[in-house]
Length: 111
Image 1 (tube, helix red, strand yellow):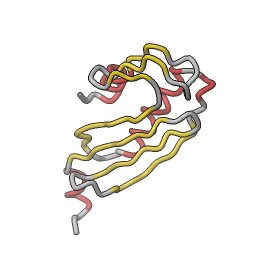
Image 2 (cartoon, one colour):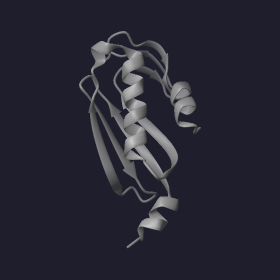
Image 3 (tube, helix red, strand yellow):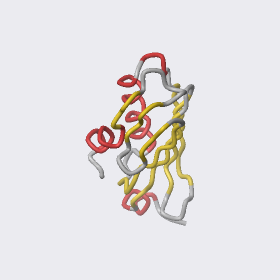
């Protein structure tokens, strides 16, 4: 069993399921063990900026006090996985050519 101080120093991974009704984020250790989970309503009708703010807030909440090594996001639509550009998403009204990867790298200060 890891002690809390050791867990806080271990780099963690955040996975996010971005859906039309919910944002579901998990914090996992390097072995894939889920350490924490956080849900928020997407409220997609409020537009991309509001949803992106909720994604960032959800990631920050689930990863509090932990060093994040990576974030992975799954979403429906046409997405360039290398650039993180969401061309269009059927579940998220108004999402056209959203540079989600660039935005999250800037907001979370990670690559």
